[in-house]
Amino acid sequence: MKMRPCAVSGMFYPGDPDHLEQLLAKFFKDAGSVRNSKGVVAPHAGYIYSGRVAALSYATIPHGFSGTFILIGPSHRGFETCVSMVPWETPLGIVDNDIELGESLNIDPDELSHQDEHSLEVQVPFIKYRFPRARITPIMMGRQDYRSALVLSEQISSAIKRTGRDVRVIASSDFSHYVQADVARKNDLYAIEALYNLDIPEFYRRIGERNITACGYGPISAMLLACQEEGARKAELINYATSGDITGDNAAVVGYAAISVI
Image (cartoon, rainbow, N blue to C red; front, side):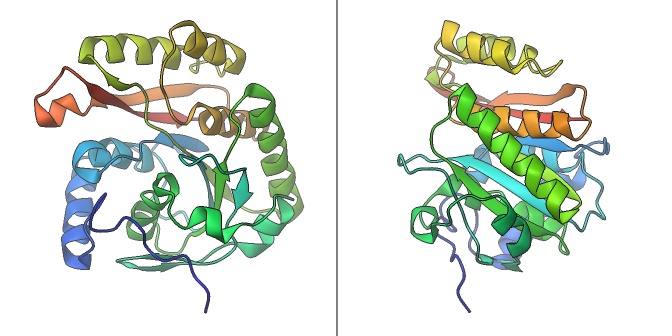
């Protein structure tokens, strides 16, 4: 069977199944309350830095969810927007791909472009651990301008309608990269504030105004627009943290946010 093998296990997260399961159990132990999120923003750094924040995002989705997760992550290597149509490997086992939903997106499949991208891969063990019966449809997003986010959200909404799937949408993104911690927090929270009432044009304006180096602003916007079409009316910031909270070095941090869309 063709599948997408792990590319960053042992680097971004433990490759040993027992170690990985213990770490995820620790993250979810005090992960907060369910909000029945239609979508979430989750970071994609190494688990030691951002795993707890990611767990706070996933914990807002009912534990028994067994539908399909549409994963949207940025391409860090400049590839065009594409979908993966094969199962994905994790150290905890295989996660099945929702092929019918993927085909309904009318997005070109490209497994080669997906093979080394970590922004989607780091999300999949969370899904396998927390939602073992769920399937995935991974989308790697190339261009991240507003028009591209709008087009992608329309493709997602149309695919959901055509297939009748029960879907949750995950936007994979870190926020500010390699700036002083206070600056990262101030700028990131300024941008996130625009999301509370799902004001995507204002989100783009604030990102541009302060040159905020969030790597997945396009996936965030596409997720929010798609969730809005599904009836979402607001977003909530669950948690914000930086790599400096773990390392103690606040001179050049990366920002991470857990955001729930309901």
